[in-house]
Length: 123
Ligand SMILES: C[C@H](O)[C@H](O)[C@H]1CNC2=NC(N)=NC(=O)C2=N1
Image (tube, rainbow, N blue to C red):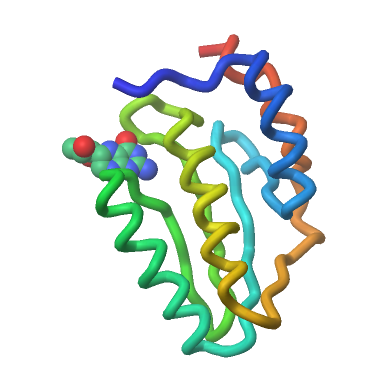
C-alpha cells in the first residue's frame, strides 16, 4: 500500500505546489485546488484527460465541476492521507491544464499548504 508522504518530502514538495494554487484542506491530510477554465467545454475536456490518466494510475480525485470551475481534492483513501500518488496526480493535472488557454486558479482559499508539513508524523 502507498505510504503517507514523509515530513521531509512534504517540506520539499508542498511549497512548490502551494505556488501553483494547491492548498491544504482543514481537518484532512489532503490538498485542494480550484481551477477556472475559459468555459465549460475546456473544463470538461481537461477532466476527461485527467480521468483517463487517473484510471490508468488507479488513483482517483474527489472533484466537483460547476460550469467552468473544477474544485479538486486529492488524498489517498486507502492510506488515510497524502501519498506520492496524490503529488504525482497534482503535477499531472497542472501539466494537462497547460494545454488550455485562459486557465487560472482561485487564490483566496483559506488553508495554506504549509499546514500539511509535518502531518505525516501524527498518524
Ligand atoms: C481497490 C482500488 O485499488 C482502490 O479503491 C483505489 C482506487 N482509487 C483510489 N483513489 C484514491 N484517491 N484513493 C484511494 O485509496 C484509491 N484506491
